[in-house]
Length: 165
Image (tube, rainbow, N blue to C red):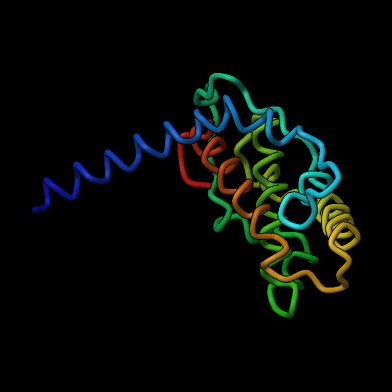
């Protein structure tokens, strides 16, 4: 039974890598597609997200030292700490995860300093999303697709960093 579990884990890792590479090939084009008339709501987030330059061939960064986010608490932005509770907590975590992964991919650095992303970017995205959705308080429903984009980027960042985000 334990050999079967190990095989399944290996298959899951291979599937995740394949999904990340597939997204790299086809997902970037979709993320750059402008939101047109009648494409409101679920695709409105595309207008507020910055474009991400994902490498065509995702490879581990030579010499990179990966520092998992959970070990970076001393560098967490104060705003991030403050938004861990309250009505927008989940929305801010979704947006912050996207910004963190974007930074790691673009800077090609897996350290805590890079993963402790600029909070101003998070606020710009949150503000744009509030405006595009016509809401004052962001809920997880409005950031669900951002969370899905973040998950895709995190998979790429983990491949680049050769370890957990």
